[in-house]
Length: 399
Image (tube, rainbow, N blue to C red; front, side):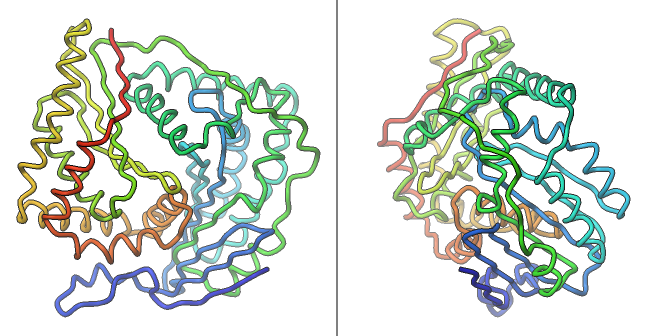
């Protein structure tokens, strides 16, 4: 059943006296939720000249395997980019842990033509046998490169465990070769698996016209049983790497986000290389993830243990640093970063779409922003204690 909701400024927090005007996202939100078509969220700003379209498709591919979604992007990239460029726009194609993302940015008046080019690419990624093989081989090289890079490898390993903890592992698939690509695309490139975010210079009638009657791919889905196939080269290690994921479920999202921001400061202060604290969300699951590398040339289990101890010790350091003033600074910094990311149509489409893909809810960003001002220092200190008390998932890579 098709439901159309037209809401004014539904995602923005309530205006407060003296509030930064940058926090008041202008425009109206059009939300179309159709069981047989893509979910569409359009932030309508007809006075703007530019429009951004972000289309994501939910995937269930095994992390580290050759990606059928990447193969599709390799196959259609040049043709789609050329079609959109003729209309004055550009294309960005990305693969995320759970979704594949197609982003178009161009003049608002050319939205129908840009969407038509995207629909054609998704509906029938035509290619000869040689073109399918070439796209597959390029996707294989992408997978090999990702697993050879230590920073990507440690996150891949943690993501596998994170998804398994969320009971998602049994649904994952991997595609064996170019001959399986059409069946893979038919299974996953269906309108009911798509989410479209549109921001900028367009109107409700145009949105309803260009996204109506979205078709499913032609052909047969074929057989794609769940597989456990990995591309597993040895990573190119010059130093140890450690990744630690703490279960953040049952901690309010805004509180967990502020705690993770403080942890990022703490892990950076350890002196470890490429140290970072990240907030991971997937459905109902949430985790605070710490990742870092040791000094170049350090080897052996002792070096890995020192690095792991430094990361786990940052949890205690963050708890000490989490004064009311520090929490206030982290909260303001997080809010500023969110609105800085949303300063362009493309940025706002990415912000809304990324959080919606990760949580399944287009209202996640709005709730996060509305909750941020209510996060107190005591909340963050309690969250850090809860995280520290939980048994984390740990991945170690040793030279």
